[in-house]
Length: 463
Image (cartoon, rainbow, N blue to C red):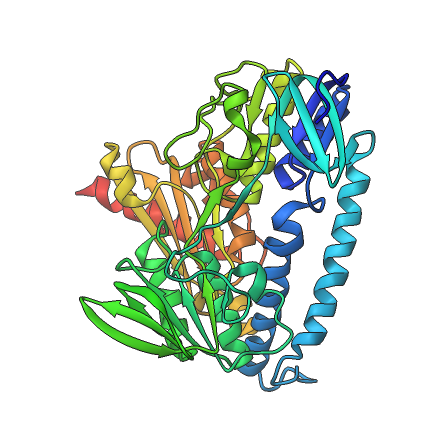
């Protein structure tokens, strides 16, 4: 850095070109702001390049293989074994196409490649190799995302121990894979590789998989995992690697699990260490997150933070929604973030939820009725060979307002959008019942669950 070098003035700085950052930058530019976006790697961030999108290439291929096996008269059959090198070629085509779309979306946004370091609360340096640029900003949005949490006992070496990025770069199917962590990343990839023919073991330190989802939903995924031959070890911790084995401990008893490859998927942590936030005067929480208000504003009124570096689920759609809010707030619009964030996992079958569980609603003082429906009664699901799963609707018995919707089954991650609208707008179960749903379709299960909730509420009133 050259002392005294002039800093170029800019109106709005966005640090991070992932879903939250590029969405915020595009929206701010649309509202007339002069925007500079700084990205140290690739536009699209982790999600587009090595996370959300590449993993869906894998899970989609896995689900198609499974569906082909369940429908023996489907016509030309998909090959029984996956060509992983071919799948990687398709992944690259998908990512390249979508990255191009991001570039087009940014339009008038100026993009600078490099690593950002704050000098004070209005100045930043951007370093790319030996090249250093300085900027003075009026306002800023921080959107630097997250990275995999590392385990001291299992350092990622790219040889036997991998994070999710490494696993998604495999060009051969490993004979065995041990997944350390039973959250959505671990279960999505573990189940995908099980479909590809890998012998999979899931090691989870707690007493349940997919924390945060309704246990009834998780049970359906757990049963499918068992059908795939996945060995699930709950209450088990990974303690190290020895030769071709992962060393694990359960209730004080040590064991060895054969592992050609080990995926460490124990969560993600915010990327805030490198920014030198102390020079900004911003403090982070014990977990490294930046405290913000309902518009993404930090303790500094002119600095905003969005996405994985703030509290809440580390999900791209949360970051994108927060990016729009921050851009609009900076532009003087009365925008605020809605906390109804759909939770999704592209497991087999898919699992999704929005709003309160029955237990959470009761804890908050609601008198609750729960309507349930099964995908086994859906003609569309039966035709698809994906009749496993259910929908649960949590309703306030007094007002008929939908408080939460939870589902596991085919296309749950798409179907949850209707549920999110229902919860967001304070929709009543009666409104869902009165809405004509197409037949035959998967979304009829949502309608059926609403009908069941109304019937349960009617029976309760007659008592």
